Image (cartoon, rainbow, N blue to C red; front, side, top):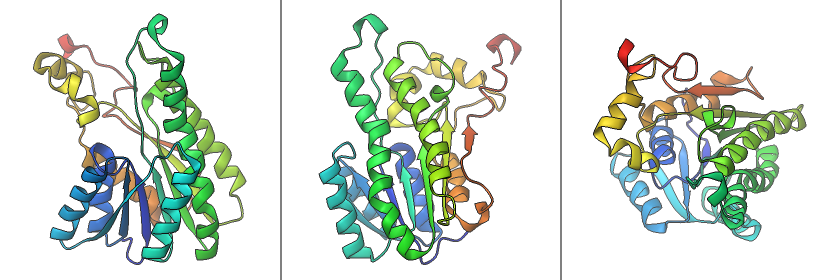
Length: 256
């Protein structure tokens, strides 16, 4: 599943799952554009990739802003020459009871998690068409197809991202551009530090998966690599769940 000669944009690449994907793609010889609103985080990932012999460059962008996205894509093309892969990973989450969930939080969540994917795809598809092929991987969540408490905006945005994936795959028919999504759950990242930092809670939740533990960003990255590579050329419009079997059969801790 080599990505040699490919240029990959990873949004939210400065930490967590995005960082894991950026590092994995670099190992497979892609030229990686690490995109983040946090310049320091993006540059740190680029330094680590470079120290390991990989090729990467950092770019700052707010995926919810069309001008910021357009500027970022222009910079990537100017520096790296082409775009073959887009991983829409940037995301935010507010954990609030519905009654306390503000309209501003709702709109910001959809702007980043859903509109951001639309804007990035819109900006890169012309470059992919010029290259003759493209792969778009949207990082959704199991929260996109099951209800999770205190996360109405997050669930709505991730569910919308799954529907967006399927619809865009149809629209890209005949253009040699493949669109798929990942649906991770229980991944040990800074995003979930509030849960993994609670040793007792983290252990119980991990044991609810069939595999019996939390996942790691590198494991999500393996799935992203497959969907970004030529090995997945007969797959489009689908969702790959990366959750240790959690949504297939939640195991009670007393059964472990």
